[in-house]
Length: 230
Image (tube, one colour):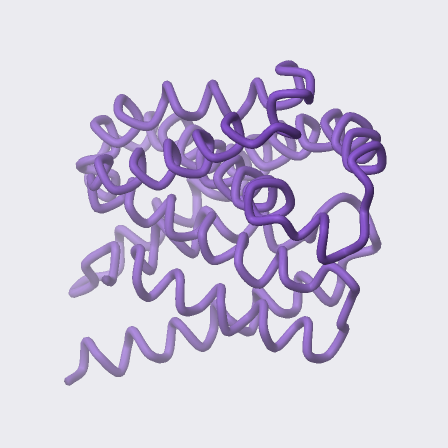
């Protein structure tokens, strides 16, 4: 019972932080919540982390709606789920999700027309899933000096999973049609925002190197706590 109430409390805390980071964003790229997503997944685990991100995303967009609200509500929890699966050493479902969305992108005519360089981070993350999951087996027991390296790699995969989900929703799932975007507009937006996506990848890695590892290291010192929580 105590463990359940603790998990519920932390889900509420992370959901509130997720919403607050979205609401405090100033229009740069996606949302500042991407800097929290890796920790949501690694600390809360795939299920509680997904729930926290989903609640936070829903609340944030209910307060501050946008025309593209559906992308964040779905993609942000999936990015958290990816980090949670890494923390639980469950690389098979993660790779299955990844291959399904990436395969649907390449099967779609519009996906085949877009330059490959725009998704190089997606391809790199796919290659990294298995080795990163393996070295994350004992994430909360690893020597402190290894934490920044492991957490930053897991964060990279989670951030790219967020991106891949948005790509999947836009192109294979057909949201570009729902939004009334012609193929030319999709191509232009895709190419223009690819550079921004790469910058986001780097920023998330840097943030996790600076604050992610110290947070995880501090949590490991709390007696009676076992991570990830779900």
